[in-house]
Length: 376
Image (cartoon, rainbow, N blue to C red):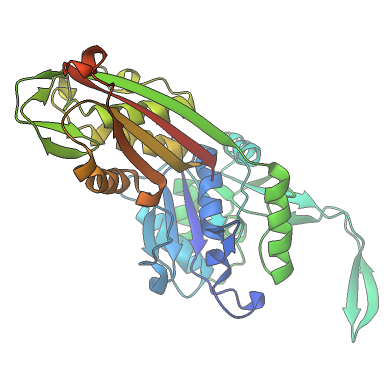
């Protein structure tokens, strides 16, 4: 069952004041929108469509791995654009989320998806617990009964076909997607919301969001990888994505890129996902001679899907020859391009074994790697 998400982030947030729109402002060093994407990914939601202002489509800080769609002048118009983007391969369910809410929690998302088993729509909300007043001219003009009142949140969840039809029939101007759904006669279940799932509206909200992040602490994952490949006939070796001229090649089922294999295993290890052989069995002929970038790219997809990002990685190549130094910059650049990170997060270095062991006898090359992942 596919659960997709649409994150609406085309607005300009006038109540926040001047400067960057709130979804692009930095929160703990990353755009608010990046936190929202990471929260949904951590809950296993994919694919994710970002509906952005047309001027924002080409921004360098747009979260990677999402489909990008230009937004409309209204919120419901932007949602329709996101729904249309999913129509080629329609999901069973879709979550519609505001880009200014950086913390869609996993437990809350699970409650929403569970509610869709029995209802065409579901939305998170928190009961109103404070007394409510009506005011006029700066004075209390009356009281309002709070019984049965809730504070609405997003993401709001729907069966894809039902909400798409509801939006197609709606004249526009709805405050949220629950209003659109109810206008079409759809029942929307209320599920328990999350106090941390705040919407950033005023400058003080950023202070609260920073406190929430600090209270959660740092989630760090460390993984190690090690690999060995023997020399064979050939005129080059693949090392960390670079074809290095050499009088011999490396023997392996794929392209035998020993450095990339060690790094890929380190990432899988940090996530508790085994090693390359689990995901790309050497007994499967389709991986014969395959470029190792396929393996590394898959590992990085798993990082993003589980709500993490790469903090840094370090690869050490162990051999007498070929000399790695002249190719280090190219190797870092190649790995950075595959992994979708800046090359300052990647280290590639080499050492010899002082003529000891199989590497010292130039029978092959060994590599070891360490990868550090942090919760996004």
